[in-house]
Image 1 (tube, rainbow, N blue to C red):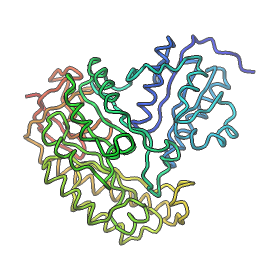
Image 2 (cartoon, rainbow, N blue to C red):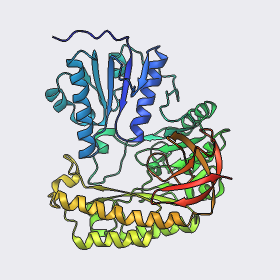
Image 3 (cartoon, rainbow, N blue to C red):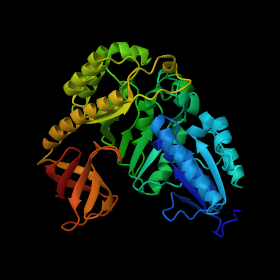
Image 4 (cartoon, one colour):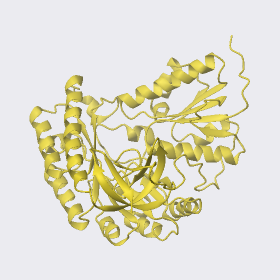
Length: 436
């Protein structure tokens, strides 16, 4: 029979999935701190007696990781190592009934919009006045800034609208207020996130207002880099390119998931674009901002994807030479439009196609990186690992892109500082350099 743990009351928040989940965990932790609760994020000693797991339910691998994490802490509760386990986020929004039935040793499950109820379960009050009062988990010099929640796009493969709801933009003044507070705490880089940045403003201002928001954010003292994540190709507001061109604080960087290039598959995916339109859009980006780094993500193994369509995708990647690229095997998600189709590309073929795309991109990345040798880049340094200081150029986002490595046995670099680095050597995804 389990006994109550002897641990001091402490809430350990465990975050799985994307940067939007990191942001949500930070908001939760800010609320808990304002309620004088002792709270930690993914405590390395795992000594919180209350655990909150913020789950991801996006695709198969992410769901499996979330379920395994829930089972891990449910088992710890069984052993008396923790007292309470709460689950929140996308997985429990989408599969709450199933989870309650299958994993019964969790105290309570909450969805993505259940923060006040989760706080109540944690014996805390939801404080409406806490705009931007987050307990950030990233290095103190950069932070994610969520400008909208939910998504109105009808993509056939995606379950996000089921888990996050309709698109809701945060008013410009509230985003600016939060960004100003972050800057006062030492944040130098803002990474703008949403399910769809380019839809920003349509719901509350009746027009796309991402450019207007950017013009307001660049005025904040202390912020030196503003980075754009998760743009959508259809209906992209081209006035954003003008702001990027004219405002040095806006990084010449864009994360724009394109998913595929074959028009037939794009139509089935309900992406609202074609091979020709997508190629023309990338050309517009590069004409407006010649040195823009473009990051994209692709899906292979979508229902009915033929060898010819996959080859078309590979040829196009070779032609486009993206700076950064990620690739996922299609995940057949219940309640999505594509679920009506037969998941008829075998799993081994999906994984083989992922490997081929990433091998191709590795070669492209290597060739592009070789061109950087001898050049000097302004870099922001995030951390030290072993004998290396690790930083990034404006063309790289944390965790997903290239890194700049500097030998710590020869040079000293203060974390969170911008340093000019001359690149002396380059690999597929790493650059090596020395301070100028």
